[in-house]
Length: 490
Image 1: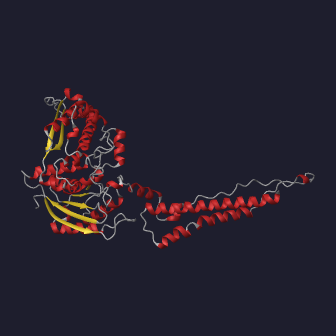
Image 2: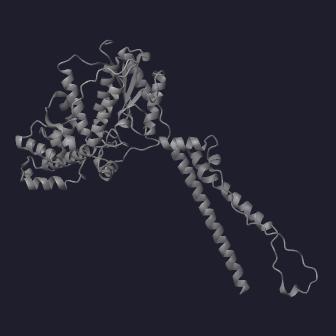
Image 3: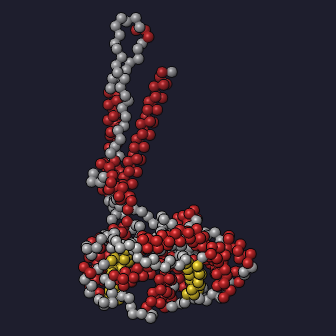
């Protein structure tokens, strides 16, 4: 029995050592891969040999050294029962703890220059944007305007249509029927949100009015009481296609009014604002019209409510049952296409009767040699060159630049690239206070990012009367820059 037990014990010890070695090697490789991904390290052939070949030998050598040291230690002998008659017995030695594998300092082994605080900062900066469905994105990974609110619950809207006897199936062409129902469901969600937070808005208005009255107190006493402000007013303005028939407009109006039972006791008003196909809107919809192969004016409706919604945003919207809140004060941007149309229409209406708010003085376009999505910190040389050419073409003084408006999102590569270009051409600007990133402020704008950047730049230039740089770096390779000048400097 003893002859058989010895090989079995050796086999178990060998299997245990082999399993521990495999675990150590796997953990070492995992730490190496995690570290490379965290710091965006461009791994070369030498790095792969060192990280996956030589580095795992360190814990294996430490384990072998500890095992050999444990085998050389004097083992405690079990007293033999036949020696109980001996008059002199050796006192038992103190029990020594079993040698344990020390915890390796992974940070010191992998990269001596990094510490835990820098690692946490790198991980925080690597916040990723919501990933849309692959079949609903273009070749660059950006969303296309199709099926945005497909997952929206339309049960209530369809039930209401059935009760009122409205023949929504008669909407032509039939492909717009689903879009019509979805826009009713989206209006219902907005109505529920306004109704749930209406009392908060009214309270905030009253507190603001009371604070304004209290602030008029002086050492000579209170001034004459101003007439009390009127009742809190609520205006709901819906943008609808101009080609909507009268019964379609009335259907949307009735649906909204029946979702606002509080309207009867408030000074509220609901307006329908038809959207005309002006030149700016047509330019914005050109690519959408080509994709949808239809020149119908009802495409405005589809663009407003039937574009893609990221799964994470849709899940948060359904779980929270609202589109606005303290965690997302700017909303979840459930209508990125509608945002773009509103900006285009608003800009067109402002430009027609009034002089130009600013002048597009200089533009520049460059192409990166390497993708900005590649591992490692991207170089800002290409974007800086585009900004330099735009400034030279416009004749603007870099010290006069008051704001940088860009389309960077939450990807750290784009943020660092923009900050690098700012530090080179506008070192007097703060990278946080003087960098307006619409996709970071409003969430994922998708197709409306371009019009949003242009609208934000025009508004800032007109209000501040100082030049503004527009930077486009959302694409992996294309880099563009433009300079907006106020009318006084044009």
